Structures are given as C-alpha cells and as structure tokens.
Length: 237
Image (cartoon, rainbow, N blue to C red; front, side, top):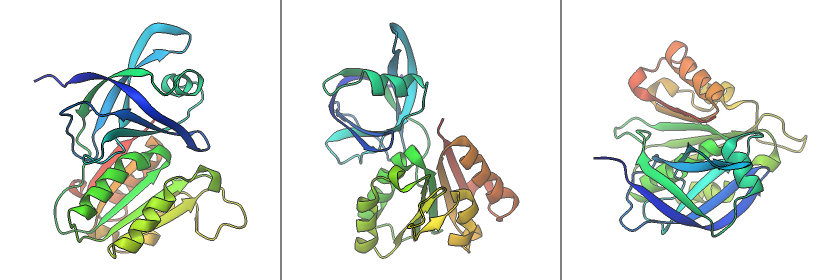
C-alpha cells in the first residue's frame, strides 16, 4: 500500500530559539503514527516555486495531540530553511507524505539514554512523553546539546517531566556556553559515557547532526561495549 499523501494548512509558527522554528499544522482526519516517525514535505525553491523537492521532518507532536508539530533548525542555504525563513507563513498549505521511518523506542527491560543535538530533539519529545504516559518504568536519560544558552528550547517542558516522573532525567550540554553556565560543557558525544557510567547495559538512541550520531554509534560499538541491536541512530542534515 502506498504511503498516504495529504495537504495541510499551517496553524502556528514561532522562532523559539536562535534559528529554531516551532511549526504546527492541522492533523488530517484519520492520520495515525507511532512516536519517532517522520513525514516528507514538498518544498519549493525560494526563487523557483515550481522547483519542488521532498524534505523529511520528524513529527514532534504526540499521537494524542490535536495537531502535527515540527521543529526545524535553520541551515543557511538549505532549501527548506530558506523557504521557511523567507516565505513561509501561517495559513500556507503544504503537501506532505507519511508517516515514514523505523525510529522508535524498542520494548525491553534495559534502561534508555537518548542523545540529541538541535532539532534532533524533535522525535524524542513524543517518544519520551508517550512512553512515560504509558507507564514505562525504565530509567530514561535525555542528553540534549546545543552551542549556547540562546540555542536551548523546550527545556521547561522536560524539566517538568523530571519532577513528574522519578525515572526521567534531563542533562543539558553546551559546547560554547557563557561563563555563567553551570551545566555540562562540551559536545554530547564526549559526555554520554560520563553521564551514563553503565552505558553498556542500556539502549542508546541518538538523533541530530550526522557527525554526532556517527560518533555516538562508533563509541557505542567500539569502546562502550554495546551491540548493534542496542544502538539506534537517526542523522539530521
């Protein structure tokens, strides 16, 4: 069966951190998905509207939420980035195809560590919240890395989850923080083994820049003692 296509209107658009766009669309009737899935948007070229190419974006909303939500990080010169920055507006109609992908939380007894940078946090939001709402008791550590304090987003929601669920922990990491920053410093791939000292006993999920996800995968398999079955990555360009 072919993957469904649909057209939806944007209902909200906000820049919530430096170059980070939080975008909502109406959800098509009957649209169902599991957390971690993505959809393909038809994205026109800024200076040539008939030149359309697909771009993939992970769904950042929960299946139970009334709208489809996406988080997008601006990349200078990127087709979708320039379109969103220069031309995209609330009310615009976008053609999409999905849901697609195999990225998801796997069942089992092993605890979980989720590592992400930038917009790689997008699919982790529904994966984490849905699992906690379903009563998943495994320990979940979220390691979220960006460059500076101005690049952070959604921290209030995840901090609230740490208070609501004793098995969820948030670890923020900045690679270029101000002197006032008191949290983790450095790139996430260099901090994972320090945060999770028993990492060989966990499921590891990584989502974000391909450099980071490739580093995490390499460390997991060559240094940290994990098997391929326990490592799940999704690289974002």
